Length: 298
Length: 169
Image (cartoon, rainbow over all chains, first blue to last red; front, side, top):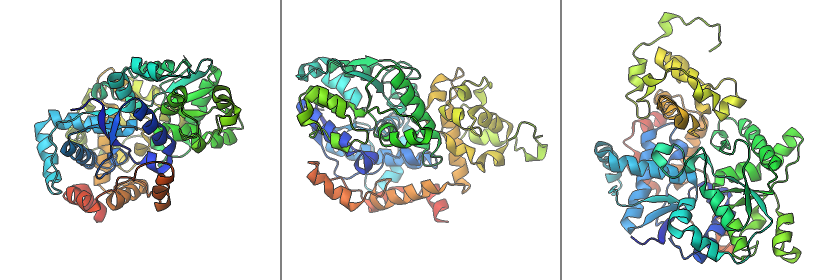
C-alpha cells in the first residue's frame, strides 16, 4: 500500500462548520506530495452516537473502513474524534474474531465486509511518521521566526493511550515539534492537555465556555500570540466561541486560533487567502501583517 | 444523590453490577477502589456539581440502578478519557460510564440530541444537517464535491440493532 496515498475522511464537523481546516490541509498535503482520494460514499464515524449504542458506533466505523478497504487505501482523518474512533474500531475488530463476525453480520446486510487490511491515521501522525519532520522543514521557505505559538492537540488524538498508541497524552510532543518545524517558537502553559469540552456542548452548553475561558487565559499568560489546533471541534470552541466567552466573562483574549495546516501553509509561502484565513472568527491580522506584510492581509 | 440521603435497601439491585460488567466497556467496574483520581482530574466535574465519575462508579457497584439510568448527570461525560488514562486500577472509567449510558438508552432514556443526530445520519450519512448552500459553496472554495451518504445502505446495516427498535417504539 502506497505510503503517500490516502483516502481522506472529512468527518461531519469540518464540512459543516470548519472549511478553513480542509482548505489549508489539502493545500499543504499537496505541497508535501501526499495524494488524497475522496471517499465514494461516507457516513459519520459513530463517535457522537457512542453514548446511546457502542455497537451502532462500531458498525458506522466498520462501514467506512470496509469502504476504504474496497479501494485498497489507508484512511487519513483530519479530525481526532474520527481518527480515534476509527482506530479503536479497527483495532477491536482486527483483534477480536467473535466481535468481527458479529459486526460483519450487520455489514453483510449492506453488502459490506470488514477484512482488517488497512490502517487509520490522523493528520499529525501522518506528518510525523510518513512525511517526516525533515521533509516538513525543507518545505518551509518563509520561517515564522519571532512568532510565539501554543499548542492544543485535543484529547482524542492520544486518549485512551492504551488503544490509540500515538503519543503520551500527558506530555504531547507531536504538535510542538510540528510547530517548531515552521520556525515558530512553541511555549508550554498550565493545563496544556485539558479538554475543550466540545463533546458535552449538546447536553450542557455552559460547561465548555468555562473550559474555553481557562484555556485562553493560560495561553495568554504564557505569552503565546496564537493557539494552534489539529481538531475541528477544539477549533470551534476556541475560535468561534472566543467572542462569546469574552462577552460572558467581560474579559479580552484576542488570541487567533489557527489550524496547524494554516501555520505550516504560511511558512510554505502560501497566502492567507489560499489557506482559508478569511473563515476565521478571531482575525489574525496583526500576525499576518508581520509575516506576510500588510498588503496581503485578509 | 445528596450526601445525607439514606439509601434504602429496596432501592438496590444487588445483581446490577453483574449486568454492567457484561456490557462492552463495563468489564472493569468491580476493580474500582474509590480513590477519586477520576473525579479530581475530570474537567466536567470542575464546573458541574452533579457530575462525579467516582460516585457514578460507586452507585453502579452498590446497585443503584434506577438512580443512575434515569439520571441527567450520566450524560455529562465529555469522553475526554482523562479518567481512563489516569486510573491506577486500570478501570476504563469513561467506558464504564458509556456502558451505563448504553444501558439507559436501552431502557428508553435517550436525550433529544442523540435522536436528532441519529436521524441525520440515517438521512444523509452526516450527523449534522449540512445545508445544500454549504455543499455548493465548496466549489467556489476550490474544494472537491462532498462525499454523499448512502441512506439505504446505512439503514440496512443498522436495522437489526436492538437500539433501532427502541427508537422506533
